Length: 179
Image 1 (tube, rainbow, N blue to C red):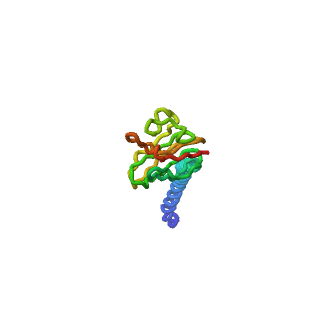
Image 2: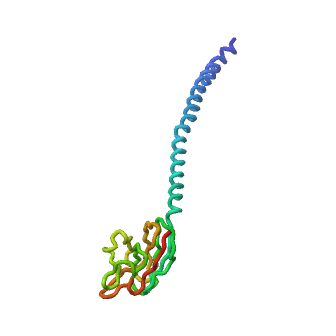
Image 3: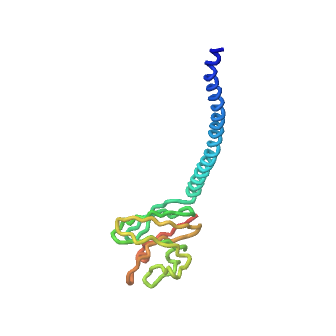
């Protein structure tokens, strides 16, 4: 009996600690199980959503966004004469000795576009058919400009003018088909 009484406090401590451990273990398990479910689910959903948005953005941009290179030189615009419709980034390089610009107008040819007396294209008369232009590009420099082009005929040109002269009238034009 003495042995039993001597071991009784140890037994009580052991039982007490086992009894406390189980609820803590259960609480820890619940918390551990609940925490990853609560924390992991939104993180996984957020990560999945972010990945889906990134993939969707890449998918959306890849087919519609294109990059096309054009060169400007004294009195010429050179590059592809057929390109695909959509959002197009034009990488324009001025390989000439003078400052140039890259302008886009909707029309069948330079000759069919309204012109000023010096041969520059009359952008105001074109209205919505004047798509836009780059900033002026110094000799040896390059620029990027992006336009959304629908299928049709376009004229790419340098529309810089001075006095009775214009770069377009000197031949710095290119007819392009967008399909």
